[in-house]
Length: 79
Image (tube, rainbow, N blue to C red; front, side, top):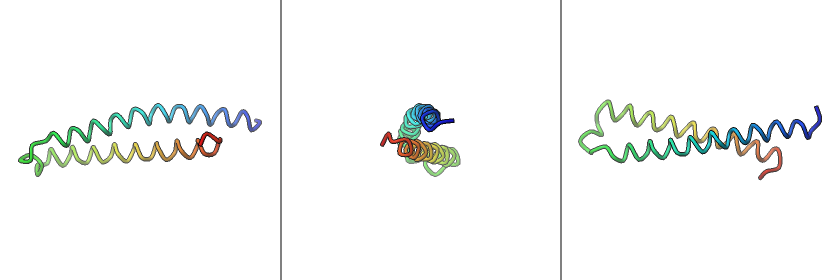
């Protein structure tokens, strides 16, 4: 397989990661907004802690996809 073909595969992967990035960015923002909407009296509950853990996990996934997307973009000269 020639470099051009390999780069085309990586570009497809980049595009898919961009889609995932966009979805995870939206999910991350929604999770953060949800946490901000909790009343202060509920913020010490197990339910809130579970919601905060979920928000943190989504944020981590978002960061991982962002880093991977950017690394591929750099490798194929998109950045």
